Image 1 (tube, helix red, strand yellow):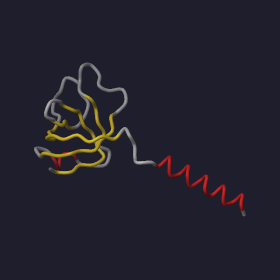
Image 2: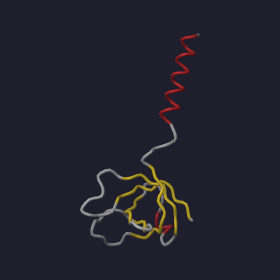
Image 3: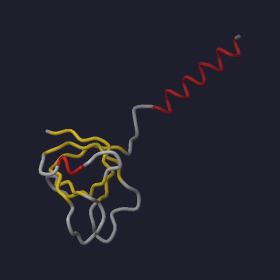
Length: 99
């Protein structure tokens, strides 16, 4: 019984620490979402116009066109391998909140 209790506590600690407070690769960004249109960098379906920056956006789960022209706060993960050819940082949007 003591061995089972020790095992259960170890598993609980491992699960708790691995789940943690979330993925540190996810960050929040604020600005206005626009359709990407024709761009020199040719990636992303939309872009986020932030105060001092532009980000290329895509989402596997959210229809970003519903937020075009709106001020939003997005939660997104940077896509590895970008930016390329002088383009912007490429983000995969997981959550959108209107301001």
